[in-house]
Length: 596
Image 1 (cartoon, one colour):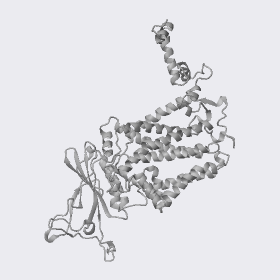
Image 2 (cartoon, rainbow, N blue to C red):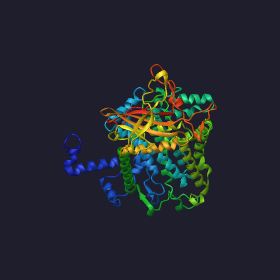
Image 3 (cartoon, rainbow, N blue to C red):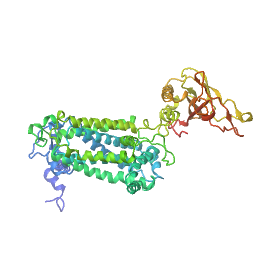
Image 4 (tube, one colour):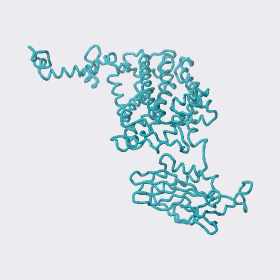
């Protein structure tokens, strides 16, 4: 007779006892969750014991569970070590999942609007608990996903794993690589700072070059929402980043994993007979089951990778946030994200359409159809010298193009501007702003002699003072440069000296770097960084004048207005001219403010 008017758990307790009834409920619940494995099965798997039930319950989840459909029930022993996969495909998927988790967290505090986006980023970094940690982890995950997808592609090509019957697996992988690049690129704009704004502006400008003109113009409008990036463009990139591209990536990832299960993981080339794919025919003595061996190994990989990522974002890696996006100010040496630098390097070579659209599109098409064109049966390295040579050559060219895409090649301003940009960039901190606040001793420091006090002619910091008859015969004044104290300040001044010498050689005459620190108020310092050099006299033909075999230097003669302001600029009239930047360092944030 039932305890209640209807059958219930109390009847089981009455019949079997409390302990046994509760255990059976928990055991049945675990078996449903794992799609076939009860507590005893899990215990045996973790201890390394053989299964006590038949059929093998460790294989049931691979047939009945949704997620386990994506994993083979067993592997060949030869592919469970580091080689030949290096776990690159698994790590690529790991970073995709990491991006989803951290991205959902950031979405809660973000609004895709030019008026709110940058403020939201400041709020995430300063007010949201774990906000900066999650943003840094999201950015690191994006960089890691791009890197590991690229390495996985190279590894697949190197081992010949794209060959029959895995051509479509390679095909889906090419689209996953493309989606990965655009996922990272679409998220690049969302902080709405100068770095993101101009990097995306450069990237989307290539779409405008697509022929014919009507196509390029409309593709550009579709991406940006307007001729220039604004509210419409930010919203489009946000929707691409959080909806369309993740959805497409998840779909193709499912297809990719399905094809891997269908054909099996390709064995190391030396273990396969030429022309025969034996990955699916795994002998019983060579099988390594997913549960528990491969599964626990992957959990260890997840734990170690997560630990490394956490250590990186706590101590070493921080996602930059520059000043607010400003369409009117283009930072010097603006570059695309590092994974698109090769494309920016190609654009420096010549025609925008050829190097920015035709060649990259042709390369993508060639990669996709390569397995259908390269029909050699052998996967062994000795039989694929041509293919491996092409791969190495391609990687080398990509490396050169990536370097060409940086601001260090092909585009340069005057030497003094390059020095200022390298040490105190328009966007970013740079060595000049990275000195700890407590080590910034007030004074004037010079690169020409770091170890002793000495006078140095220096252009007046606050403009040219008035003079009789509006003519100032000497606009320089002696300034005492002090000995540089030991520590971070001296290390910076040594780097300053090296930069001035490397850039100034052949471009500036007698260049000297000045770094002046002034206490403005408690907790705030002003820094004036200047590069000064001499100017030679120029004749009517704009050639330098020589005197006794030496360059004749200009003598200073400035005309000033009634208020005492110079009419001529130091660059054209002074014996010594200068350029540089001024910025402020606060104790609270180490660096605040912009240079000018």
